[in-house]
Image 1 (spheres, rainbow, N blue to C red):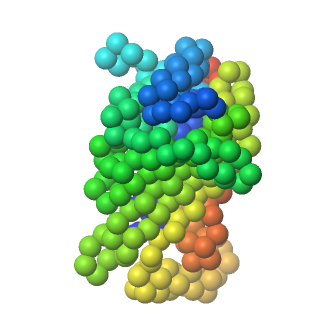
Image 2 (image 1 turned 60 degrees about the vertical axis):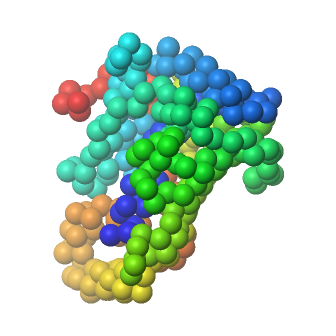
Length: 264
């Protein structure tokens, strides 16, 4: 379904944006990327493992060496479904959902803009797949807004084209990063809001309505069992139908803690 793919893309972006910062004085793509990589590398020097628990998932991150450089392998466990997990490697050059070297070649510095009263530097990518192949061919642009005072990402917007004849039209995923806190040298946003502006087809909208109506008609015990099986998917469907953002709240951060046996 559309909402699952959009959420997967959004969460992927969230995971890749958890480390690093951008400088207030940067006036070019090269200087932004150089300073971003420098700050990221300083954090990765002192953080061997980190565990982030949110209201939607728990992400386990463990530093390993790959091609002579440090990287984190990540296991993300979605809440409400033990079988739903994602394993990935995130190299230092993939922070912010961008490959640093590719970003220097394909991004443009688009000046400054004001987001929620904050002066932000703007980086724009007109060919997202050239910077991050995981974005897919339907992604048409990515725009990053970076707080010029605090040097952290404030907002990220990904635009996608229509999926084809008969499918949904153009859509966008906007991620807002709030409430930054530092834990043992690791700086992370503690609230992330994902706005899915998707042109859902009438058929998909009707299908979601039918699912929610059937859930509401179930006996209470059976409905609770179904909600546990579906995890947060039911709430996500409600949010998509209402237009409300999907909010990710960080509940705890553990730095250099032991990763439980069996996670990797």
